[in-house]
Image (cartoon, rainbow, N blue to C red; front, side, top):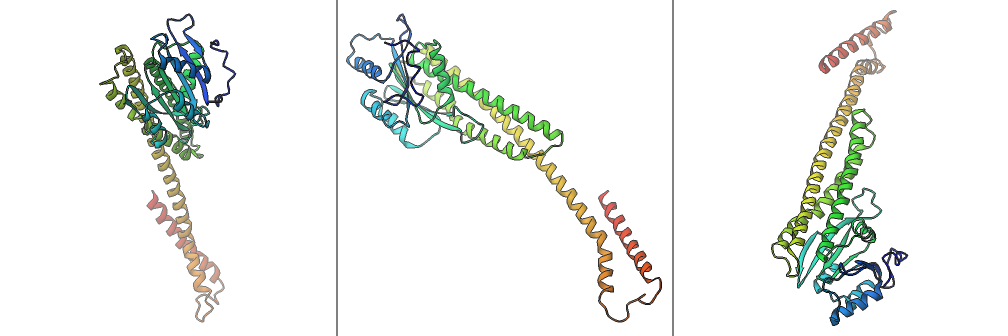
Length: 346
């Protein structure tokens, strides 16, 4: 069996079976964590099926790339997973949930892409099957939480059981969400500072993107704590009580993160309302200036229209001071109109 880092050269897209990474955990062995490839995983699963002396506390974690054509075929041939897992892969329902299927757990967890750029579209699904001897995770795009767990295992982290591995994954996802919340908070702080400084720029659009991101994350993640609590009311027989308690603890972290997301949404909403109020105030000011200019130009436009009709009887046509008299009349009416307009404004 190769050492833990011997398989690090495998491409992130997976080997010939679509296996991105595989690890065999055995806390009683001299090497508690060992990296395995798809061929070694198939052999180990075959030995498990024959029950030929594999340690009872040993289990494997296999992480697959579903974009690889051979991944699902390999699972069907070697993994002996519940039919519910394969149905979940194809049903197209991304809502987060954890449910029992036969003697295993089937989980659908939403996670952010490895190359996350704070866009609502940067979220994909991770499918998980957890049994007493095998944990299978599968995704179509690189995700941050499962990669954080893979990095921790490569560094020597060896969960004692498959349930503890699931709990570590949930905590890794909570850590990723905490970082997202901190990043969004930092961006909102900068936008608020710019708003207070009077530099409106395009903050409304930027706030809208952040708000849609938080709404999408909360919509996809919110069902998870309740679903997990319901599951833990009747856990599988192979799940130890300490592991169940650890899973309950991981749901509390999700609850805290979801509350922080809700608070950020309210803060973004208030900022959007304040920006909208500032925009309306600027529009009202511009409209007032336009109205005043129109009112001030009204007398001269009326008189110019009257005196420009070229009909007989135009007053002051022969008067030597007629032009200045008309100017005085226009100025007087303009002054009265300006006084009335600004008096109403005040």
